[in-house]
Image (cartoon, rainbow, N blue to C red; front, side, top):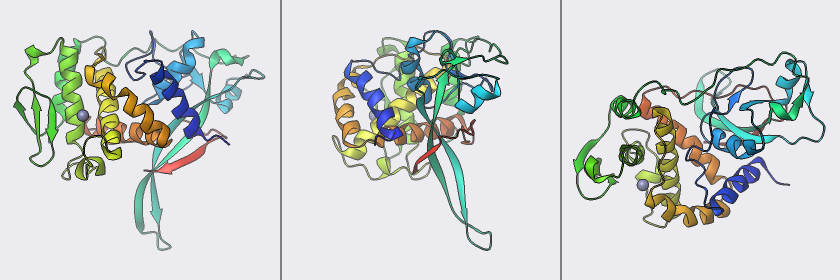
Length: 299
Ligand SMILES: [Zn+2]
């Protein structure tokens, strides 16, 4: 039987095969949000919902139980969309002492409000655009970078890369980029790699890299791409398609097909990266008591 992992990964692979780089802000106007809490979905969920939501004009989503809470129900024959969340979990021994802490990744289904009927208590949400639409996106992008408290040193050179051995980012000068969005997308991408350093999030795909074309390398590139997309969106920057992204597409499709858990894990890791760079404590995105909740994995 197909798992939520399979559904989620197949959705993204299909889009990638159609040449659609789904994490480049696929929503047209309002971001996908929960119909009751009003919270916008984070991580990979906005992308999954934007793909599933192309059929609908409403940006509000809810669980089966939440539809009932609003006095209505899901229409007969409608299928839900799998989305994910991770929540911090603490394992204790019999004395109540903490043995280990880890993140539990789970999946649950949501429905667009247009898939429901009789939602008598449904309220309108304010149009939820990117968080910072009032300010100049370039200023916000600069502020976001400034929040990365223990960011590594930046050297200016002809290519963009992060070198773990010396913990330094090399970036081409801003004027060599075709737009500010390209500059920040690249800076956030390299910055994301640098969070993997042993002194920061100590991520295996950075500390134990297996070189170009290896599986760890593929995962790390996906984490950096997602992180960059999350941060560009936070800044309100249009996420640009970069040459590198297009070049990686085929290798990602292959890697995602080989390992159906990779996409969800990379997206969860990227959310931690973005939270780390923004200086916020990673927290659970759980906003559901969905009955169909399934544990995917620990991360
Ligand atoms: Zn990279």
